Image (cartoon, rainbow, N blue to C red; front, side, top):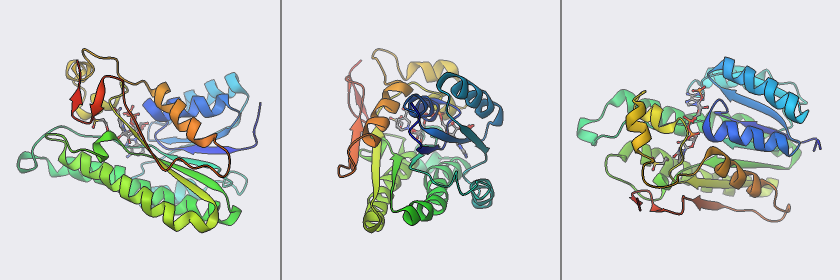
Length: 253
Ligand code: NDP
Ligand code: 8X3
């Protein structure tokens, strides 16, 4: 059944974002879905509209570009700017290496996407929520935000920044009745490792050998749960891992 509510989900062309889009659509939310791959957004839009009879708007842009964020989100009509839930999910890791051997281009991409992209999108959406005195921002962090693992340095730092920014946003937005939740998933089999290892499918598959990882749907369930709680209840910070995982670097295989 339609809720009349709108969820804006960044990075909806794969993994958690795509699963969140399906989950929120199933619950009757209209959606704004974003990512760089326009074709995937168009396919998902058609599928969700047909399956759940919700309205879906697609915006293809790169969150690393402040101008692109402003242009894309600025193109939304006042109706679509009434965003109830923002899921800041777009992000990535690139490679595993020590800092002394690291690739500064990869650092730029991770920090620009995971930290600055999240800020740019939030900066635009927050005033819309403030004006309506309601809203919920869910930032996707990681177990990597909580514990640094070998050769994870810059990615872990980018997610620690998401953790800190979530705390800061919560303080900033308290007077406006806007919830801020950080969801920190552990190992989940999405396109994440394929991206991290730059297309090396065997290496990506090995990451999840010997245990059952989370799926995109598992994480989407958790995100939706956080958003479905009563108005006076807010989960501030939530870590979710596969049962076989204790923290970012210890997995029982
Ligand atoms: P996927 O690679 O499956 O999906 C990542 C999504 O982010 C894609 O939709 C991609 O879209 C989008 N994205 C990446 N870069 C940009 C960009 N510059 N501009 C716009 N969109 C972008 O990975 P996951 O679903 O696993 O990851 C989602 C989030 O969860 C990330 O923030 C990741 O760091 C985090 N995370 C992942 C974990 C895991 O084990 N999988 C665990 C903990 C956290 P497109 O390429 O079309 O632009
Ligand atoms: C993604 C999970 O452990 O690869 O944030 O960093 S991990």
